[in-house]
Image (tube, rainbow, N blue to C red; front, side, top):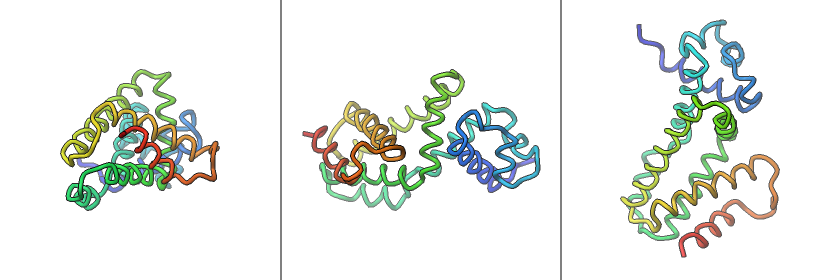
Length: 188
């Protein structure tokens, strides 16, 4: 029998909320049932094990953080150059900042991946696919920078988001100004 995809997304969203709120130790099937306001055992019907739940959360993170087709189309038709690249990076940072729980949940999973190889395998594959997708988009759009620069931006964005979502070292500098400085520094 096919499972209800809407309910699956609702459960995964509740799992991301639990993960962001309570950390990886608080992520249990029962806690997700409570957060999703579903009967006990529902989460385990959709995600049979904790590993399956984590894989479902990683998939849902990708869905929630993905750019819209309209955003991608607009950028694909724009004039290539550092300004377009900065706009793209600002959009990535905006999506990650606006969906705070998802980004905190992602950081929680990254920390857990340092202790659990099965989480590292799922999350690492997802991250590498994201990097490959960003490199391909960058090349197709004729934007400056190659794989090395895109990887450096991933590192910088991770640090910027960790800073902005926790305790900023320079709260008076706007996030957009930081992104512009990163682009100028890495795409000389």
